[in-house]
Each structure stands twice: as C-alpha cells, then as structure tokens.
Length: 266
Image (tube, rainbow, N blue to C red; front, side, top):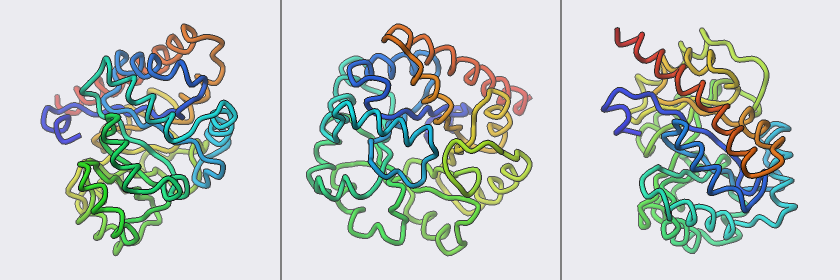
C-alpha cells in the first residue's frame, strides 16, 4: 500500500470469500479482478459464525463451507494464484477461532509459503495481539487492524504504533454490506484518523457503487468493496460468467477512483 501512496494511486481492494461461488474457480476470478484494476485482494477465510459480516457474506461463508472449504484449501487457492501472479498482495481476512484451532505458528508458516502477504483478524484488536505479533513477524506477514467510528482514542494510539500494511477503517459501526453510507461524515472521520495513523488507510463496509468509491477516494488511500461484489459472484452460473461479473463490477469502480484522484490532483 505504501508503494501505491508513493505514486499517487488510490488502491482498490476487492473482498471475496474463498470458495464462493466455487472453489475451483477462485484463482481465475482473482486474476480477473487484478486484470480489472485490483491493487490488493482480501480473501475471506470461511467461518461458521462471521459476527461482523452481514447476510450476504454470511451466506457466502455458508456456501463455501458446504463445498468443503478449509484453511488449507484457502491457502491452496493462494498458491494457485501465485503460479501466475507473484506480485499482487493477498490479505487473508477472518476470525480467531479457525486460526487458533489450526495453530498460529503452523498457519503463519503455511500462509507465507503459499504467498500470503498480510492477515486481518476481525476479532483480534491491537491490545490483544501481543502473542500473535511475534509469530506473524517471524514469517514476514503484515498484521492489519480494523478501526471504526466507535474505536477509542486509546486503541487508535495502540493501532498507530503497531499497524503494518494499512489500517482498514470500517465506514460505520455495524455489519458489512449495510445500506447507508454518509459520505460527509466518513470523510471527516477519515481525515481525523489520518492525523493519528502513520500507515495508509483503506475504507470499506457499505461501498456498493462507483460514485461511493470515488467519493471515498478523496479521503482514503484505498477503497475496499466486498458485499456488493460477493453478491454479484453468487449469481454466476459458470467460471466464464463469474469472471465476466468480476470484470464488469470492478472496472467502473477503478475508473471512478482514478478519475476522482485525477480531479483531486488537478
């Protein structure tokens, strides 16, 4: 993300659940997203109780688990993706329970070997990450944290000291994919957060349209889009259909974010 910031490019980060719409399609869908302008990809690790996610991603996790997705199969998707793309960063996003059951040391080693660059654990705030941080550091995995409108100043200070890669700012308190995104309020909060956080800031939760992505690009270093993309992919009837849906969804957002950045610079 720092490299994007250095060249004046606003990052575009799609999120999708590993194994949905189909495990075998995932590497090719990831390539379609990168070809359509994705700078980083967040790949969700399916979990049976995704408490921070709305119904779209909850159902996506359920479908993926029903198709036999595991952490090992998620890492296999990353490994296959890396056969053709050695540079686009991959961030795994998920929850503590599956990783703790798998074992942190084993998971970090296997994730790095597969080609993962960073990890965002939704229910592992910075003040509770002391035992995790050394493990990830040993395997050169960035630890990414969430911030929200309800994050305390004390936690933001801690986050600012520990954050790597980027901080993911959720645009309002609630679940992913919610319907209301108030741009003026989000912009003001992002500007305030930027004064406290040294790493780049990505914003998501509620981004559905190119216009929303463009508006956020004026305040954030990257824009994350998840539920709306997952919903599009869920309707795919074949790999070709899924790739086309990924391209048609992401390309307008890429163009809008780039146009907004150009206007800001001008």
